Amino acid sequence: MKDPAQPYRGLLLVSSLATLVFLVAAAMRENYLADWQVLQREYRSILEAKATDPLGREVLASFHIELRQVSIPPLGRVDRCITCHLGIDDPRMSDVRQPFRTHSGDLLKHHSIDRFGCTVCHLGQGRATSYRDAAHQPLAFWDTPMLKGQYLQASCGKCHLGSVLPQAALLSLGRALYKEEFACDTCHRINDEGGTDCPELTHVGSKPLRGFDFSHVKGERTRPEWLFEHFKDPQAIVPDSLMPNPEMTDEQAVALTVLMLSLTDDIPPFDYILRPAAGVGMGLEGTDAAALFEGKGCLLCHQFAGQGGELAPDLAKLVSQRNADWLFRHFKNPRPTVPGSDISPRQLDDSEANELTRYVLSVH
Image (cartoon, rainbow, N blue to C red):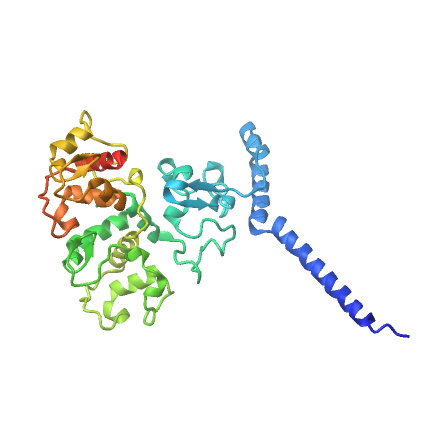
């Protein structure tokens, strides 16, 4: 008598074999054929070809195929870009293809990977280990794809707050155009400075992509393209815009786009920020910060570290709610930073405002 379960046993066997093949393929993909592993094996071949001296042979001997990452807690970032971009700090790799080529320019001399990582400047998804997932190109699920080409200068504006930065000519031009050539601050506001008739721009570089209407944009649907086309012809992108057409050149529109992209809510810690004439690590030589704090009369009204008056908010509480950039601006000029403030300006220079900011943050 024929076994009625026989056909099902055959089907079960086929499905089991198919599942096994699938698992083996997935294991191969995960453990041997992943994008980053293929790239690292190619890079090892490059190292072998360049191992023509003792140092080259030492580098080759120490190379292992493995995930690589750098963690920067102060910036809240974990970047695995160096898993594929393996030769960024090796001058021998200046003539090889990407992703193995040496980093362009001398930026790494002043922006070490261990301190800055990659995505604080380039953006993208730092934890990814494939070209697509790292957001080299726009991704539907990732709001900050990598900045490329001339727009990469926007990232310099996060830390370099001076108006002129020779290494970022477009950002410097954008800052000058905003204030001088086109007087954008007549209507727009950035960090409590400027008019209020038009949208505030303080964090426009972090505005979600879904917040932009791309209906009239001719180019790709990216933040830089929207901004560029808007500067070239405001009404073409926002038909009911009240902004007059400034008839900008392409260079001017790119420069102002770079400036807008630099205005984000991604504010680095105070020790990363450089200001004109008051860079990181610079303070008032021979000046006691506590004495400066007391000398400027802050304690007459504010309570701080158990001392002072009660006519104004407790500074310890205020410091816990604000970042260093806000404190610096408040020390420089309280009233634009806090509209309606009763504090009269103390005529501080940048070095003094920097020192006071460092002091209240260190005590807190």
